[in-house]
Image 1 (tube, rainbow, N blue to C red):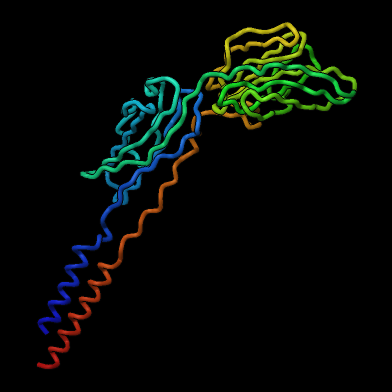
Image 2: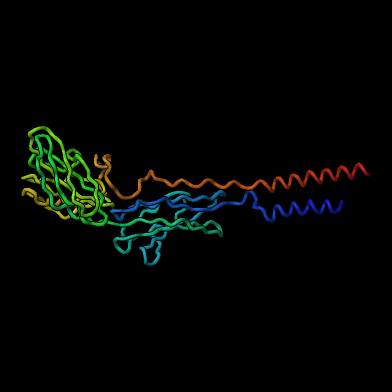
Length: 309
């Protein structure tokens, strides 16, 4: 009988000594992914903290220019379980290039580190398309010839068309986008009303959403329309056929227009883009099972001994 009681006590003590109790808290932190490229220095990094005991937390974000030292961001000591760190130019301390981020969360005497995320800061517009010309191949169709920007991060070319000799290259006049490799020579055929003279304008975009100046065959001025999130080259206009049109500088934080709905490349993270936290790990029920079993056995032993008496 004595050995049986010792065995039961050992099992109960073992369950509490080596199995995590159900009330032990979990602490973790996650960062959401950033776009591969950013074309502005003001954007946000979102985080989510998992703290099952709902204890107070302190969250901080750290940034590193690839190959440089790690630094803490200007915004610090966040106390909410989910939120954002708003980055500014002072945080991106070494100009363009790849930046890495991680966050830490502290609760009581425990500190956890998040996953590391990255983005490439690129605010330089690509080179303009070159070797542009057009020809009418029949009463209905024009064929455009051009060479893509030679920038390594070239993405695509926007094509605009108008019957007017002076027009705005915007969402209303944009008719196509053409992808290709950097420096690749392209041809593109566009149909229209028979025997109507159309004028075209072209702009190059890179992976970050930066946009070049305009190349056009219009005999008068072509003004660039607003492109949400884009950065353009210096100011100016063109009045000569086939000449490059330099553009008024567009604000990187411009209010989105129809361009956005048509798939414009943009930087930053929407306020709606929140990180989904991992499912909180289920606590083990083994301690309760073992404790209950131990109590049942003790009760059985007690009743058996009472009957013997």
